[in-house]
Amino acid sequence: MSQTIRLGISTCPNDTFAFHGLLTKAVDWRGLEFEVDLLDIEHLNERLLGGDGADFDVGKVSFHAALAAAGRIVVLPSGSALGFGVGPLLLSAAPRTVPHDTAQLTLCPGRHTTAALLFALFHPRSTRVEQVVFSEIMPRLQAGTADFGVCIHEGRFTWEQQGLALIEDLGLRWERETGCPLPLGGIVASRRLPVETIRTVQGVIADSLRLALTDRAAPLATMRAHAQEFDDRVLMQHVDLYVNDWTLDLGPLGQRSLDMLSTRAAAVGLASAGRLEVFAG
Image 1 (cartoon, rainbow, N blue to C red):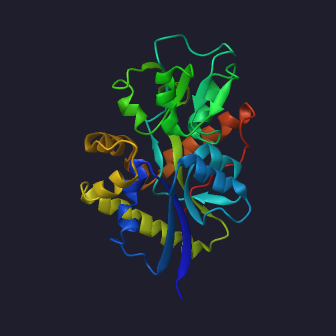
Image 2 (tube, rainbow, N blue to C red; image 1 turned 120 degrees about the vertical axis):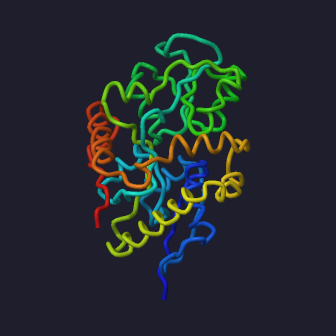
Image 3 (tube, rainbow, N blue to C red; image 1 turned 90 degrees about the vertical axis):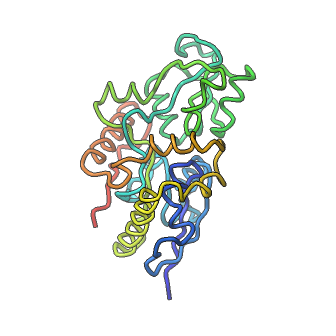
């Protein structure tokens, strides 16, 4: 009897690109059965942190959320979004100084996202923060119902077309201060799974990713089905930015970046000091 793996991934283009082969069974599931849910990243984070049995066996989560569950999970080597020039952008409807007035409202894409963690690290005096679904942020800036917004996903490529102003590239600031690529999110597996099962899941994900990289046009239909932005050029820009050598294998620099995130977050009381371990089984 095959083992069923409850898998949760985000709807962002880099995930639907990487997991196209798995979702369509274009790669061998290696004797496993996958039940897949595609959700907004903050919903995935909440499932991870629920701790009531509703969480996934394997799932994509923000590394901020993963820090709070470090004792229960292991990070898989494949499937992460980590790199230089990949960070969230702090935007506004018009050029203005960075937020410091508590009367100013900043929108973040979920309190467990790495984007929200970076904003808290770099702008601790900005206490008026509202957490919303990422797709609401740019429309609310345009409507004038918020002063600042921390934008992720396709917003990184479309903010100029939307008539918004760049206040700060939070990822670039991370790079300058740490010298490390920014670890945004990754695939984690529950430690309740047997090591051999985790190894098999990792193999299927790596196969799916390699398939997508071999035929980059093949995943487009899957990507379009879940994207907020339907322009194929924008979708592939997303892939070009977030899918890289570290997506195939986090490696030593990936582990160092995760350690840096843990250290920086713990130093200001924003997350537990739990170390995220990359699976090496």
